[in-house]
Image (cartoon, rainbow, N blue to C red):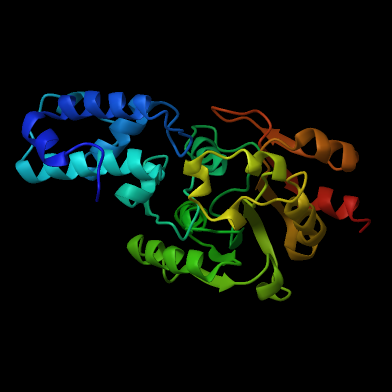
Length: 312
């Protein structure tokens, strides 16, 4: 790679993990990089790049700060720091991994970098002492589907949380499904998760489910036009939700009633479209779910509420 900085010299001068963390922060700030793929600051992004590259726990920087690195490790870190600056690719594309609540998944340029609020909700609801107040009992779920699965991360988490469920995962992109296939094998859930190529529910026929999980494209065209380079590195189809961002969400609301069992429901991430959605569907009972970074980016809707809204 034709780097602005000589990575051989950098690797010779910097010795400890702390050295590389400080150096990466300086380089990232000077280059005015953008974040938002699981990290929000130069410090966090630098820590992720370093820890994931070294196969260290991504939430445990402090114990390793003064560790001396091998020559090979120093050279690799220097190269990856410069690659992050030169290409402005998301760090996950450089290390090849993304994490949801500490669970690691393979990612590359064929898929959007997963950072779904739904993963956080599944963990917080099902790992709490009281259990979930709205999601179904995990042992009672016998069928689930992840629509717009991308890297397959939510389908795989569903397989882990719902041990008795057969899980379908659907995506329009064959490239994305190739990545999902790698993750399904890596997490050893081939016997539980089935991948399908097609548009939303189309490849599933008349199948019905206890639970629909979906993190569809929901970015509006104006927001996409203003994307920084890091976001432009991801597949555009994974973002494009139409002029107001809700085209696919509308399709999901229209089609979901035909694919839900009684007592089931759908959890759906929509970004910032709550006001539009509530104005368009004033009689639809949506439960908006709070996460660490949002109070209205994800909703839960029951099969019964969808049935009433659909006039059934």
